[in-house]
Length: 254
Image (cartoon, one colour):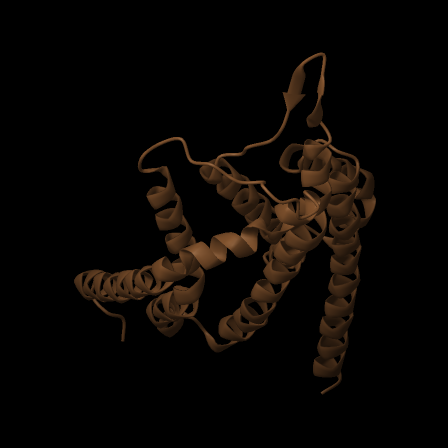
């Protein structure tokens, strides 16, 4: 029996309240740890600087450090509370799904965090150190004609940049799930994916050029794994279609 519309609104309000409560608890838990999280995010920069003594990040506004840590607390709090937030989302939409729809969704839900973690790790451990070395190459610590040039980055700008890179790489690594999801919905086909490889590669190159720093290594570190994931998606789609064909043939024989 379907619920009346008003009951759905009440249920949605309840789930949103629980999700906001989980997020609030996550932020409260993460704020005291914000300096340690920030230090962890600064590790690629310290490595690029060669762990020189006397290097520092600065803040130029009275509230900048506080707001930066607060932003970091929200970022960490959301990650910490995400399982509970998603669980509330699932409790709201789950009862309205058929069994076969639930069976399709669960593999995506398990794979998505793993792919995001892979992309975020690539950004943190590979792309950021290379990119920071590129940007630091413009320094002139030894005075030339009486002028020296040295980086003193603002902590808020650095945090925004590294979080954007981590999120961008994590989201880009969702490509296989997007392709397989569209294929299951009939929006794209295996034939179109195979025929339009060059357009897919060109799109990946453009996206990598937009979201990565302007050095040589950073775009390549996104282009290569993304196109590999594209080809893996085609392979997985072939396997899925062949299994569906076998099940259909067995059903006809029965």
